[in-house]
Image (cartoon, rainbow, N blue to C red; front, top):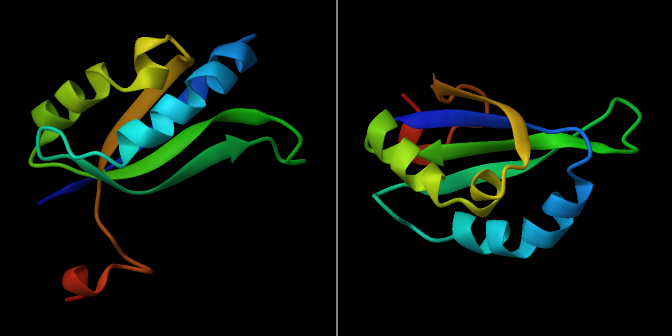
Length: 102
């Protein structure tokens, strides 16, 4: 099953949305829905580490369509946290799970 790298960049002035939705976001990411599950993730931060600028999550999904269905209900997405979202198919390299090592 393929992996996808999701990067969402916070909209200006959206700190309150991130704080309010974070518990639901974290709970949602540990549930499997449409065959999609999160493998790794965390906040993107400024170079000085003093502010959050977005989120990055590696997700495993049957295909892009299933991933997009999963993201429709994701709390940060539903609340409009992100100004910009980038999603690319991603192949493990360094640090690959044992099941992915050639």
